[in-house]
Amino acid sequence: MNDENKIIITVSGADKVGIVANIAAILSKFKVNIEDIKQTLMQGHFVMFMLCDIEKAELNFKDLKNALIEEGNRIQVEVWVQKKGIFEKMHTV
Image (cartoon, rainbow, N blue to C red):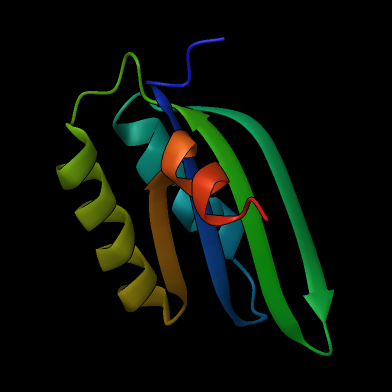
């Protein structure tokens, strides 16, 4: 399986209306496909993980990452964007 075009987006912050919609809107705008999404609330703290495919994205990885972080700042949540292979290596024991 080729993970070259796969990214993991992690979003964390106080729960509020619109977090998923705002992040998804950025992805849609730049033609990024959401392949899987998991979210949860932990004592009022919102956490979301997204697996996305950037093969057809209209931005390169760095610019997409910056656009997502900028949106996170605007809506007051933390956003981390990593290539899937790096994410997996960091989380393998």
